[in-house]
Image (cartoon, rainbow, N blue to C red; front, side, top):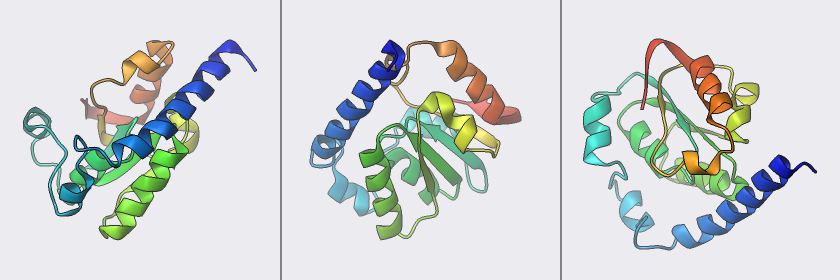
Length: 153
């Protein structure tokens, strides 16, 4: 296994462990989220405005709270994350809340191998780029998945 592959495997293990902790934490407040509380920040909502009817790709979505919050607002959303535990919880939440998001488990740098659609908006949140060894392939993948004239936030 290459050093880069080892780093991604360690990262995946770390995030699988974080899912278990975060799902029970006050910070993520899963109970309130299940009762319609949005996990999105006011500046995110303001930046993208009305997303109803738009297609969105959420990179490094963790266990999908932001993805599902956007989905509640009428967006057709796909979330991607490295953590299989995170994606499993996201899919369970999607089913439980009867939403319409799709979730894909893969290394974010391999997104284009697993997600063939292009999107009106590609969204990622704070704290994600520090986990990546090189931003150039990440940026190329974003450009591949973003519709011409689309928005990256």
